[in-house]
Image 1: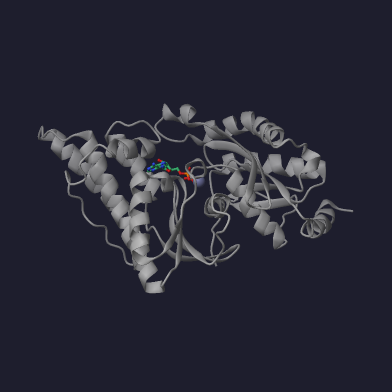
Image 2: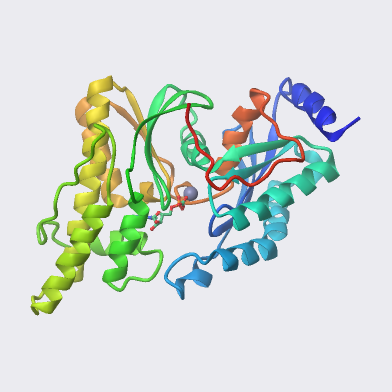
Length: 353
Ligand code: KG4
Ligand code: ZN
């Protein structure tokens, strides 16, 4: 029997099992991660190796260095995830992997590893979209969350407002027209000499600053629920340079606080505009930027005011990890969405109808 036929039959049988355990692999950017997830909701293990130190020297992710580090670490992360879950490869029901979007060389390492494991151990292979994974981090944090809900995905590469209509069914409500929110945070941090990735440290610094110190423009977008961060980023960088040239004493903490305030107010206001227009009752946050302290506080305040239930991933699941991929994979498996060994990395993979 061919691998494809065998795994199709297995996937059918697995769906009738009481518990389904999935080994998931993530390698789309600069984290090499593996995890074992039960029934899409329970984390049995979650191993993450972050490559930040390898890239910090260059001020951003260097794709070749990322691929090399993934090659070196992916087996170890898989071993660690299985060990921490108290399982052998044969004990898991399926293998899941992020197949896009992301850096092609980085994605290929995870995809190749997952294909090899699936073929060798005769397990179904489940392809997962990285953005979908971020959304599903919320299923691991709040076991009661179920679609429909809206989700603001804000990460280093993406800023989207999705309507999650059902498990695996996504519709874009709004999206950025240019930079992603995380990218804007990282670039603003760079002018403040904060090392890569600047977002988390800028956030920390901003806690001590005055957000009224620097007035920044309100970005304009064509689409009612769309975002745009490039103008805001440029305005910030120019304002900082001008002030420095004039010898004006501006404190880094005040600058960080002003920029963070502008980005967060824009993110929250647009999300609430959609919430009001579309009468949304449940809203979630996802992606690296969902760890932002001000974003979490302001979203909570805005949602409380409207009686909207807000869901936020626990901090350890905001950034890239494989646990979220294992959660997304479970719902794909229930729908019979498995791949054969022709699965390839898809750097520009989209997530929507
Ligand atoms: O989701 P993620 O780990 O990777 C992508 O899929 O892109 O997101 C990483 C991004 C980086 O730009 C990082 O600076 C940003 O998330 N980030 C933050 C915070 N923590 C991470 N940005 C602002 N405030 C934070 N606390
Ligand atoms: Zn991510």
